[in-house]
Length: 364
Ligand SMILES: Cc1cc2nc3c(=O)[nH]c(=O)nc-3n(C[C@H](O)[C@H](O)[C@H](O)COP(=O)(O)OP(=O)(O)OC[C@H]3O[C@@H](n4cnc5c(N)ncnc54)[C@H](O)[C@@H]3O)c2cc1C
Image (spheres, rainbow, N blue to C red):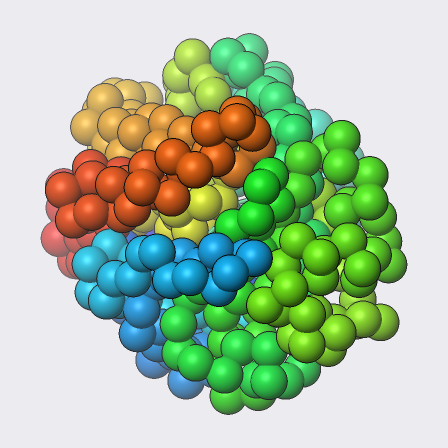
């Protein structure tokens, strides 16, 4: 929808096909980093999203057993700066897309695309100057183009809650708590909500059981015992992290965008951020000449792909510090995480924060 909106702002006519009967999101929070916010500004929805969200002043790591604060950085230095409920972001994008004139067809399942510029759906086939598959990690568009290099389910299982209280996360900080191969992230998400995510290895049957096994999580995170109690009985969303890599992000008049092209574990808070940033880059790379669209798309991938490739590398690396770190070396993990949190390392890892975002009336 964001990509469609940016094209519509440039005068294109755009149709979005969504397989679900309505546009909706899961009940969870989403971190909005510098590049993500810039794209929301270009779209004209940043103020609305910020009003429902929250600025995070600090990014912190704590020991889940002792509570020791072993990493603490101010919000400006590459950490997640804002957070909002996912549904708020999605509604703002949908309203903006409709206002820009984007046609949204729900209940329309895409089955594939043809590089000549044809989209195949359950409602029929449609010709276009440009087809963009932003259809997530299991992208039918990507598969039909034959450009998939690798898709994998990672062994990390994440369980997410959006608690209807600030008592779980009273401070305006994003805090990650570490305990063995388990991890809990907590951040307030607006004036009366707290976003909580709990990560464990998929072989950790107790930790991944739903409803939450309070005693196993509170024994790993005794400092959070009171807060975890507030999650009991709340709806939870659980899934494995996924990764997608591609031989190419395009073929002829078809491009793939977002998780379809570069699904990644969310440890740098950049999945949606990269999707939106690449959408902005593609929308501002395309020229007016329809005959040159395949060349424009190829240039877009050549120039901008490095941001996704490097972010994938570092988010995979961070994920493995949770579930692949050898038990007998755990005492070395805190200093290592502290090293990754130094400004020097953050500058390398948070490359997507510096993704160049272009106003719609300018061209890359
Ligand atoms: C636990 C977790 C936490 C995360 N936290 C963050 C975060 O804090 N910040 C951040 O930036 N990112 C985060 N992400 C990543 C972010 O959610 C994704 O990167 C983002 O949603 C990708 O957007 P997308 O539009 O590419 O794909 P999706 O969000 O998957 O959207 C794809 C859309 O296509 C539709 N669709 C799929 N197949 C078809 C079909 N065949 N026909 C028609 N429609 C179809 C789907 O219904 C859906 O509406 C997180 C991800 C996870 C799993």
